[in-house]
Image (cartoon, rainbow, N blue to C red; front, side, top):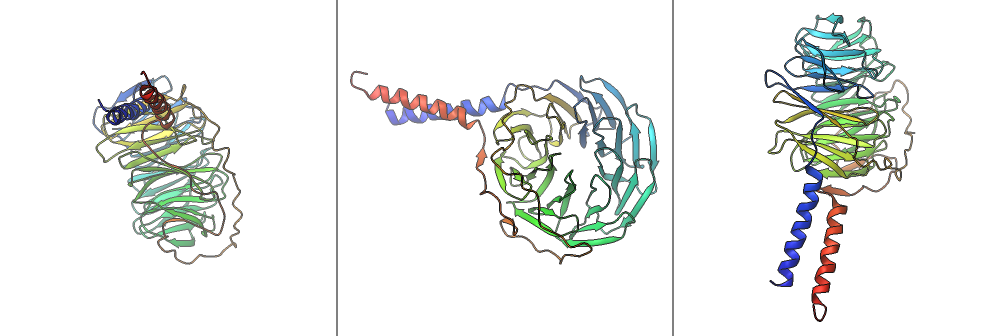
Length: 414
């Protein structure tokens, strides 16, 4: 056997070993399979003790997998940080329940409701029913309602001072009375979120991740290689994770600096991030492979799990201890992150505060499709590394050992 051929075989085994280490040996702590193949969304309390899921109906589970209750059909679900209140979008309207499954209030004036955003403490609930944006207090009092053609996404800050809505061609800001205050033109808005500190709004819009000031002014945008599907913001407001049809998971700092991206090999359907950015999760869907992924803050793949169907939603607890995922075949899987490496979350990346002022009451001009890369007047670090499959450090170590072995073979007398 020639030395060149041996090198190829050894390096191939190294790459396979690295990939296997990252993608096998992980099993859920428990799974629950619904009676019919439906799986839409999942939400988890801050400490991972309560898991709410929309499968064939709405369920609440404990960390140990005990089903607390199940009832009512729904497509979207949210839960407060302490797990005491669950809000769900249903065919009957917006339904808010306690952790015993008792309905606290129901608004069926606008239905069905399939998009929901609840402030972390549950003080406000924003929804989309049909083509109508609505804002309620935690007691069920309707603050605002505004109809818009083709409503696609909704978000509210912690103080509920504004409703941000997505339409097919614009991002729109409403006040608590439902009056439009600003509009930013950009296409195919699929997901919106406010940072916990209220300083910016992030959106998954067509081919771009965008960040806007609450007054509607564009702070930065980053164009990816295909349609954005999902975004999430860490509760400390420092990091934004995005998933795209270009098969990549992207991690940004709050000023638009790309820290890293990772190629899953299949379209990314959903993403989430822990409170301080120590863990990032993703799910693949609509491709040949159906997996749940867990990454560290540094962009290393901690593990992946082969799901039985397309992964439609993932949720990390704020403390980073737990991960839940649902797939379109009606399965909820619950994982512990214990044992996964936990490097400091992006300590070399500055957590600059957004300083771009936005004059109150101004309305920015309609936006245009951004060009490739981040667009802003602010400065940030150079883009981070692009990663793909496997565990690079492990593979590199094996490759180094193989190289040393081959060099010894070439020594006289070997």
